[in-house]
Image (cartoon, rainbow, N blue to C red):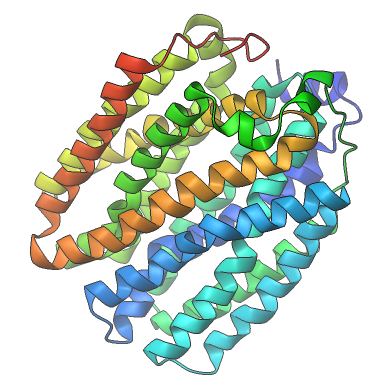
Length: 397
């Protein structure tokens, strides 16, 4: 189905408003995630300090999304919560212009992260609510976020080759302003509860063995990505690559991610969600080993980035469909918040802190190898314990 057909068949879907928010939200990530560690390095912080600071972006995801998700589901005003978080995120980011000591940066990264982590789980819930049973088209909206990421990660990389790293603060500030603007364009979507949903509490859903297993394997996947998100840019620059190449390396992965978003409806017709998960884990193992041991070969690094289509793109869409299936009606925002808290918060934060230690003590190659081994645990658990997941999310998983 083409984009025009999609918008024609779903005239009530605020396609461009949702897409616009995703565009600038992930454009911000494209400017922040690959280059913020370089800014921290310019402040003479060591690897352990950088790992600790970057982990704050993930530590706050352990508790912040759960709190904001509860507020959103309790009030029924998910869009209002997104708007408030965007405004407060902009306000707290201004603190970085005032001081640059470790304690000061720590404080404001904590504050910025609390509000930043509120938006995406709620936007995922809002978007999936607008889509209803047409969740296979989620990737078409989400792909605009990837487009925003690609544009900024490439552009900022080239810009930072010409100007001082301090100007990154102004770039991020501008993108945060656009996020505030587009947050006020997002329409609320009435939550239509299902009868079955109201007979089960969130706790009962989370304690289902298949839900616990899925959250566990996803947690390991994000733990393994901790070193990638924290040290990949530093690793490339330290091995002689330019910031322009750093931008393209990140962009290649996300360009391939866009492709998988558009391919997912076809893939879901031919492969089970379990098989897609298994494939994403295998690709992640290969990817981390290549990055860890073949950093001196640019073509190998490019190939490793192509695998991002599976290690993030395919895994993320599959995860969103599974979570949307388990947490219905009034539990939608809480379900997204729980996934974000457990997987990105607990898993990602632990991975970032752990990699900060092993990077310094054991070296990059061993650190990436450990990540590959952790993904291997997810692969084994999925093959051994997870039941076959049907391609239709309307069928019990």
